[in-house]
Image 1 (cartoon, helix red, strand yellow):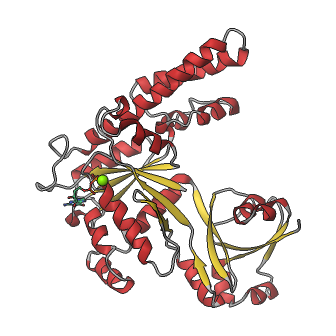
Image 2 (tube, rainbow, N blue to C red):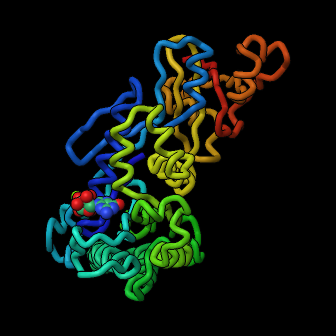
Image 3 (cartoon, rainbow, N blue to C red):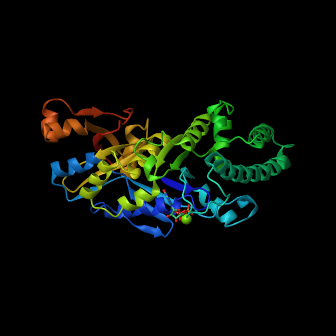
Length: 369
Ligand SMILES: Nc1nc2c(ncn2[C@@H]2O[C@H](COP(=O)(O)OP(=O)(O)O)[C@@H](O)[C@H]2O)c(=O)[nH]1
Ligand SMILES: [Mg+2]
């Protein structure tokens, strides 16, 4: 899963990105690497695999990971090539979801590109650029389909869809609200819609970057956060409140110091943990687990995934030769102390191809290739 961090300049994107990746680097021996300075692999904090690791005295505990990309250069006019313009837009096309950082903190030392703090105006500035970029994609497609429309009946149908999306965007609306509003019907249209890979069709999580003082009550007393929440609710998106500056400080601490620091601030979790949770819900994701002496590991899947494709996450052979899955909830396994003990009590399910994997399932796949 790949998340792109976007927003106007000076809103705290890099501060957030750096603290996310640095926190990742510190988390024990979790795999962490920086592919390039703007891409970081961040482990998904998961208490469950740590506990399973203890139970199994496992050699290696491997969390699920999220890839974050710090996408700089989005300014007014980006879709027309201003700033890093097109390069920036190409980077966004590759991500599964967008974390849109909006400035909700006052600080005279940090210049705002538009002179004042106004989160909804800022969101609209960015989303307008994304809409413009999508309109270009649509127009290119429309002229291509137009050329074949006379010979090809399905082209006429696609043209109607393209014009419908175009009109929606020209109204200043985001493509993803078409899905929510039921404006794309039928499997064929949905497939086409997805194939355009529109920027404004991607799920968005708004990260309201507040000052330290607004953190404890989750931004409840900050009027600007309320505006962001109202805006996000209209297009069915999540908001999470963060203080990038505090995250940067937290990322310097070890686990014990971190726990004390968070408690002092009246918080139960760090911004990273909140962000991971928000992105999981937004994308409809969850984790299943594998456990053993060699490795305890979390694997990310979409909610509703059946056992064979889940097995395929581990290895294609597991999916191809799938026979059955032995499944036990992680908490049950921890309580019983071993898989054998859980089996004896009949607490391990033997599941077939139609089994829908649940969050927190510990699974042993049986396969034959
Ligand atoms: N007061 C305050 N300053 C922040 C916060 N987050 C970032 N900044 C400052 O804002 C400036 C721009 O931050 P940066 O992360 O580089 O912004 P980017 O352009 O969006 O990547 C830097 O001087 C940061 O120290 C915050 O939560 N509170
Ligand atoms: Mg930056």
